[in-house]
Image (tube, rainbow, N blue to C red; front, top):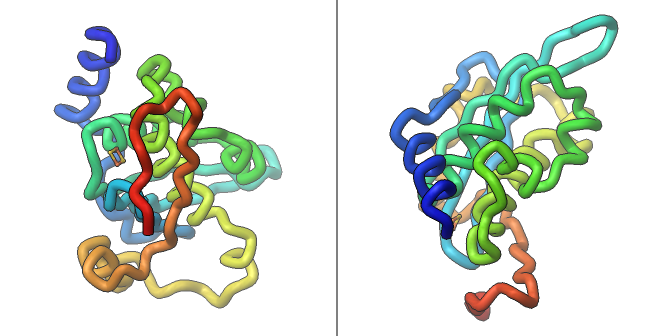
Length: 167
Ligand code: FES
């Protein structure tokens, strides 16, 4: 990993943006990586802007590595003002772009953030009855203990030297 990238990740971890639960969130997504065991939850609040439903703000909590925290920090900044379709089309690499290109072994950390975002924006949640307020939902720690978070399938790239764990 380049020194520049390490410095940007370190800076983002020292002063993460949009960290913490959002009590009045409209959507919540939680994912866990079966490969590394890390978990991430994202809260999203929408607003109307010029007749469009856009993301007003996004926050996150993570039991994850520093890269996942740094990506979530910059991603929650990037998401403000995006429509659901625009947000859904963003890849982990795009969400991590403000940090710079991630090395192959760290791509899955950005995919964890992408997974939490997609889980929060999942179509079936749109037609589901309103969820319990985020503040009374199971905590990330509860879901970690219960193993009930959505799982993100991490696809290892051919140039990734890390071997996925067999399940
Ligand atoms: Fe698992 Fe980074 S090592 S998300």
